[in-house]
Length: 407
Image (cartoon, rainbow, N blue to C red; front, side, top):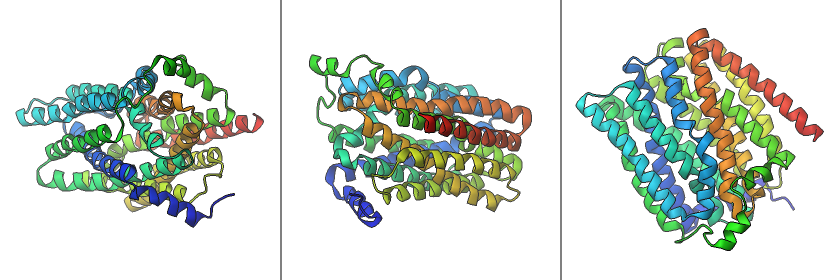
């Protein structure tokens, strides 16, 4: 029996009052705020150092590309190793990267290639640790609450997309970009501590029997590939990341070239995208778990493509802000609905690997899209590149939906 929307929302929000999930949610929020403060400062730092749109795309590519090679290995680590050690080790290493940028800024030695190399290190550690991180929520809630837990986790991420750029705007106006990287480094500490506390020692199945149950490291890839609805949702997420994800990556270029704006305008634009993402995540909380997540993902992905075309044509900055709110909502629904569908279908002993497949679709698409869009922006201009991406996104989703209907 389906739950009314208000009951579904009330039950979902009840998770925040539990000790384990509530503490994890708050620590993740603090960490994400620091990350988004850095995400605002870094492209503007590259632009101030004379970097081109190609280098900005390369920086985003370096941060996301390692998922192609390492995220499935990260999924195996999540299933077979102690997730406490995986998260603490790789996140501590990742924390050294913003610290290194602070040191480079203080000494005046920073160069664009150094930022890109550090982004590559972040990408490698992310690819190896994110499946362990993403499988925490299904590990600390009941199976029937996985969708609500993931949607709540999406709300904290999108709240950080509002608070992080706002914090970045204050810091960049007062102490400069260096303040954003300091905030990013500090924000790792509460998350690492809570992740170590919330997961029991030896959380992953490390015994020989469990390793036999989880099967080959690529077993989860074969499992999801055989389910048409899951396969279609993953393709939707991949093409959304490939074609629509670069909107955020190249937002500073759009703001600077099309609207002659500054870092304050960029912070506002990213915050608007975060507001939309928050609205999308909260909207999912109010939708019963029995609703078809694959259809929600497909419809919102098609909308993302249409909105990207509208963004490319927007003549006024405040019209852009409104469109970014809608784009944030549609992309949030696409990714969260797919994540819920994938993790609900996952076998417990393969959950880390299944999360790795989802991360491969989302982050892998974004990595390739950032690189290709960087060249398109360089050759065609920012508005033309985004418009072409939007048309291709709608076309791709129409083909995916047609194939899924036949299946």
